[in-house]
Length: 110
Image (cartoon, rainbow, N blue to C red; front, side, top):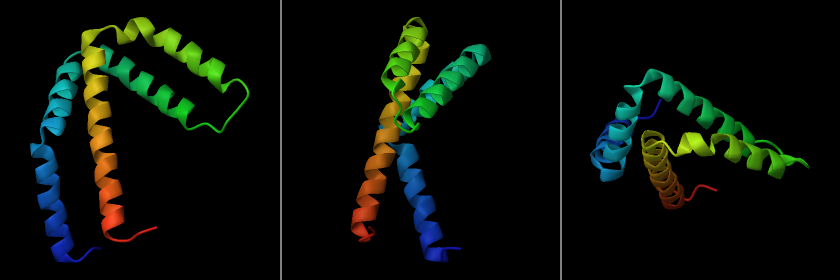
């Protein structure tokens, strides 16, 4: 368990993240799409399949499978609720990756 100072600083830092425009947009879009449970379920299915494909080890047909996946979900992604949520989520994920990269470099962790 981290010491109390690290815990307090982490909670404060999390609050700063939640106050960011990037997080606020992600949260807004997430809550908006959650109001349509069936659509939100399909978004989660899309996200899971996308994650699984991106994390597979290289295979001969991976490119073809990615193309088929994108084709299968092209019409689905035309829905503004879906696209706005996925765009906001991607932006938030990139922000979190940047934070992790910066934190890692600041503490000299390899």
